[in-house]
Length: 342
View 1: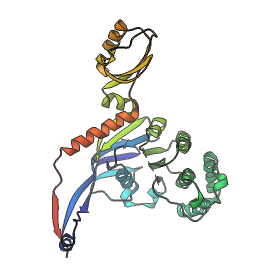
View 2: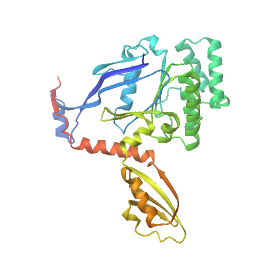
View 3: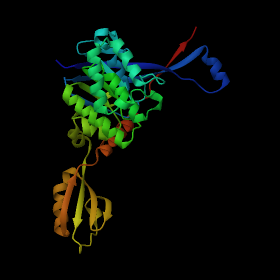
View 4: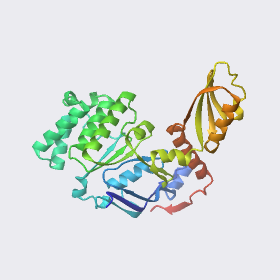
């Protein structure tokens, strides 16, 4: 049985359209205009036990809304979802003790208190046995190297240190499912790497099921084998990380090392020239034409080395998001409903 099962899940909001000007504001007291926003549009998804799944999409795609639905923070408009057999929005205590939600832009720790005080509060909320609590806390703080910071007020910690504390708090009750929403947002390269290594080690050791949203492709490449791309509230892709490049990129990047005496002329005939730094050049070539283009290059030039690579993952994902936005631009605008407040 999958740990997470989602079927035709939808969430929509009615957003008040406030107009400028005093007269329009006065009219709005009696006759308001609302626009329906579909944040999640009938998605279907299953996640098996122990999977580490990346949930990608542009801003406003529905990623965070989906995590909030699965966490029971908000109710759906329609559709069903079960996590470990529980319906999230029923908010059963038995379910709350089995999952955790970490949002990179939200704090769950008391700002003016040392983190260890917030940890003690979590112990009481989740009714964790003292011996188990001490053992888990010590293991997590050792792994994250934050043991000497537990007595320091949270407001005095760096952003990276605070995120480590947030992860520790979320994992104290040993959840079976972990929802991570932008856990490395705003962190420097070193802090991002440390969080990545911790999550990778923890997931491999505990076999926790993790659903991760992130705009940092290095997070995805380092942690996830499966990628789900959501855009405009719909799932556009569900498959392997390598498969997303094959599905959404129609070209390869070819790096050519020319002999010193080669003229390197007329390379634009073979593809889009990205860079020339003699005796090296980079050319973008259509994926289907790579073999015949290389044969033509080798027949006309003296080439000492060739490297054929997929385009950077960031570029592929950006192209996916861009194409989705282009499609959205030609869709009919949602109707505006008129209601009267009493």
